Length: 85
Image (tube, rainbow, N blue to C red; front, side, top):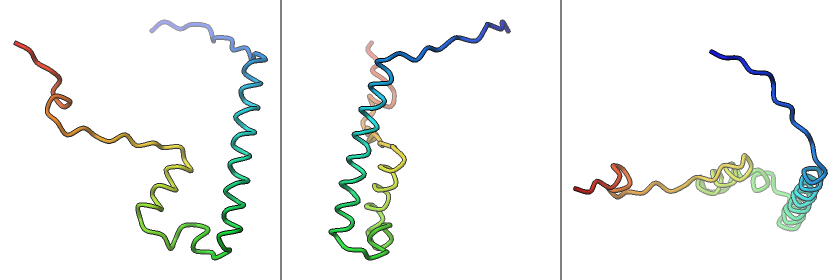
């Protein structure tokens, strides 16, 4: 196997600005969620999602870790491709 030298990565001003804008957006979303939680009530179960249905809890976990499941297609062409003779 051939070994190559490490690639040098450079941080540009555009990257820093994009990071800052995304971070500010996430902070505002977090504050809005905290405001909704405070207004909605301070019940321990509702705050961590133990009292909600399993689908809602699963959705909350997926949102927290950034997982966006894609629905699986159920037709044969998607499973085997399109064969044309």
